[in-house]
Image (cartoon, rainbow, N blue to C red; front, top):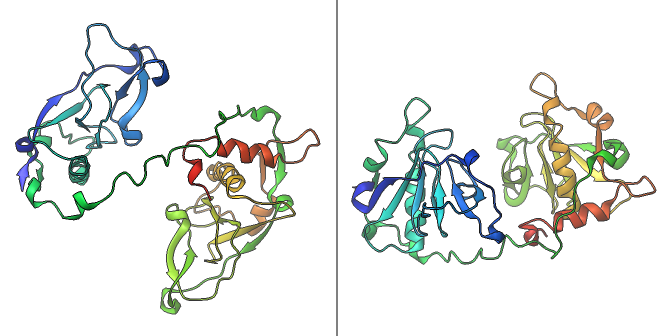
Length: 319
């Protein structure tokens, strides 16, 4: 193991303030602005080039030195500006892209050591990481290009504008037949491959795979009414849902994956109404009201929902 400083030159970034810069789209020549953001490769905006300030070159790692996203570390593949409390890591030796991504993972894995009261500005360079010749074999054996193009939309259209003022209210029981899940203890689970849907907010709600026969059909939406309340997921295959989950079967309309993702997003927006003391149990869920875009006839505009989702990035992966 070696400290980060033996493999990378660690320097401060530009320390720019985003609110003092002019937004400019990437298509119009905007430069990436990297902040302490935890997602989106740390890029929080694209801004107009700053006279006299040269962007940092592609190929560097950026690492947040403080804030909620402390040690969020990313490989920047285009020139960029950086905000406050950002470190730039320039490799001292040639490293492959998979190796650089692995070092991003190594650094962010140390996040648990830091907090608002203990930032990483003095200690980042001392974090211990593996030497390049000691990296796991899978690092350079992994094909990192296999996800290229996955962010493409399913259609070539631009996303439509959501004019929510004209949406209308519908009860969930008017749109769906709602059925409860069924309790199954870990002791009684058989080994298998069928999805078991729990009250989780990750992995599409799948908390295990079991060998029991399914109790719910695919092509439905699972909604947690306990635990991670109002987490809604489209379930493409037959499955078992725990008793903390209600299952929505469409009433007389085709629930496509894209339409289901639109509805799941709307359902999740009801989360604020519930908590551990106020569950979204079956009776409340049946009477719950959500708003959806409508046709001129006043019925849900399923075609619009389908087209909207298919125009979004990554929708080409929706099946």
